[in-house]
Length: 295
Image (cartoon, rainbow, N blue to C red):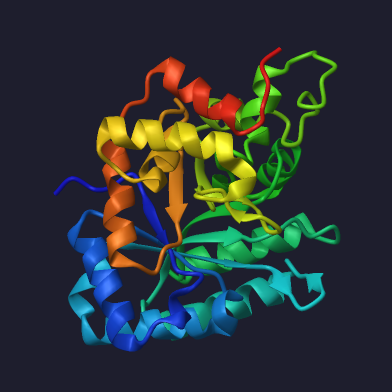
């Protein structure tokens, strides 16, 4: 079976009934989705519990998929202490009814993190067979470098916000040594760093502009972008969402888009992005139409 380059984000899974959630997950697996993304805070853990019930009723799917979860975000603070990491992972595994996590990500940078403690937590989880591999989310190059200085099990993944509109990771590479407002480095060259160090990038919210604006698809604030999206959608006979995902897939860094839809129809639409390879002119037309510039 050919596996999809996309992953299914489960942040909104708890909004579905058990029956609809089960249909969504099974549809994703049937269509090549292998990676399923969770976090302990999603739906106040209801998303993990619901997913675990699906596994309980369909035990044969466990070994067909990669289950990823995240920890570290608490109410009003971040906690990447050894005790918190271990406790949250054990609870995630219990709720997910999965036996182990294929991937654990540290959800946000904790300014008070003790790197030796994280190493102890990772070693404990790995040696107990509770986690197979480790990564981070929303962290920059130097933060990953610091972790890897202390970790026996190195960082293999970084999940970051990335879309046509929210494309700072791309812009900082284009605007090297320029004075325009696009030029500040927000990640330290994360795309290039990941390619050099065999770190797999995952893009969360590939169709979102910002928390304030929500999606840019059919958003009147992004009229010019939607005109270009529609033109390309008509050319390739796909949805605008698929074009937005293909924008990320076109990058040479082999980035995994995390699509958070709860609709089987939308999921199937976005999977069509894998059959599209935008030309350079098309890719840059989307980048410019979103409000970005070129130096």
